[in-house]
Image 1: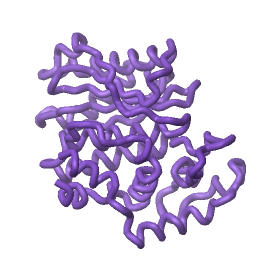
Image 2: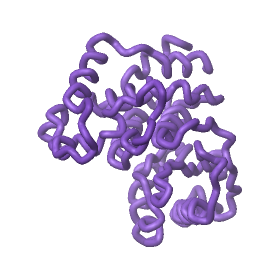
Image 3: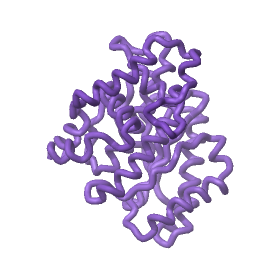
Image 4: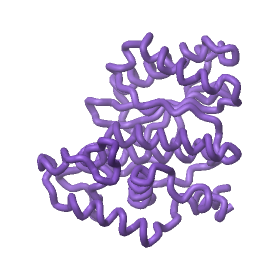
Length: 271
C-alpha cells in the first residue's frame, strides 16, 4: 500500500500535461501581483468564470531557492482549495472500492463558523446524501485568516474521534485554537442529530503527528495532500516537503482537467 501511494505521488507528468502547464504559466510569468492580467478569466475554464488570480498560488512556480521576498504569491487560495475538494468528492463516487466514503466540506473561517446555525444547516444538508452509506470521514479545511494559514479538521466516524492536521504545528495560538474548537463543535452538533453519531459531542480530539512544511506558503498544498491521501486509505504518511513542487503541478493540472489526474492507474500500478 505504501508503495502504491508513493507511486501515485511521484507519477511523472505526460509530455502533453507538461506542455499544458507550461502554456498556461508562460502567459503569467514575470507578472507583478497587481497586474490587471490576473483579473482576466482563464480560457481553459470557459464558459465557467475563473479568474487567473484565484489560482495564482498554483500558477506561479516556486523558485528552487524558495519564495524569497514575495512568498505570498505562492499561497493556495480558498477558491483553488475548494475546487480541489470538489474533485475529491467526485472521485470517490467513481472509485468507491478504492476511496473511503467521505464528505468534503468547503473551507471555513472563524467568521463563518460563528454563524453555527447556518454552518450546521449546510453540513446537515450535505450529510443527507450519506446517511445510508458507511460514512468514514468528514473533512473541513480551515483558514486562519490573520496568519494566512490552512489546517484541517477531520471527523473519523468509524473510530469516533476528531483529528486535527496542522502542517505548521510548532505555532499554536488562541486564534487557531478557537478556530479548531468552533469547527469541531459545528460538525459534532450536526452529527448528533443523526441516528448513527449521536455521541459526537463526546468524541476525543487528537492532534495528528503529520508531515510539516518547511516554509511559510505550502500549508494549502499540504492540506490538499492530506485530504487526498487519507481518503484513498493511505495507512502511513508518504508525503513530505520534497513532494510539494510536483504535487502543485498535479493539483493545477487536476483543476484544469476537471478530475484528479493519474488516478487510479498510477495507484493500482504501484500496488
